[in-house]
Length: 278
Image (cartoon, rainbow, N blue to C red; front, side):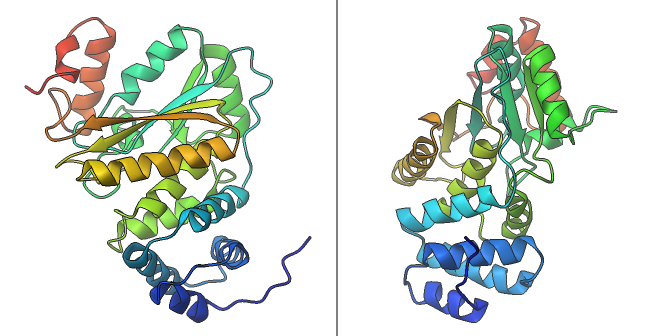
């Protein structure tokens, strides 16, 4: 049924500015309008700052994530012969674990449909690292994603235009408005993409420490709990680990050198560099 509610952005911004709860209908409306280009960036930026300062409760975060997910398609991987599983890290300095891990998991017989992001705040993005390799292409269609998963068991790519398109816009806006380190916004961004990619199981690596978005264990646990709840509610077997990010991870920090370090690990060299600082 079409949404017959009528909302306006000044009222929605004021509601969150004053610490009140946004209704699921209001969230559905604003995400839909923003995705279609009918709400200005300045108004959404104001709302993001209000959320950053006032937070969102569990029901709001669930509605926010569901609305972003509903802005596009959910990839159907039911035709694959392999079980599907993915891993996501909240990011840190020198965190290149996804690169060797995806290859190892695929070699063990699973399919890993990893939709990754670019750098956010001070953290490097997996796509940025991959694009340091000349000629690599990270923009794939849904059919190409399914074909590569069938052929080799792994893909690391950007979310296509049809997968959580609202997050693509919100992700970029958070990066330039000082609203990155918001637990509900981080949870909604990560989980909307992970749910859209169609994986059956998900392991979350929630970084905590001086080089992470979450500086304290308490906030890291809060983020991990929110994401596990979101994944479980959508039928994805989801678990989370808290890992330290007080020093750079591994021996290198920088896109190209992190790719090379990952290749060294897969070749059986430099195994200690991803568990100890240089």
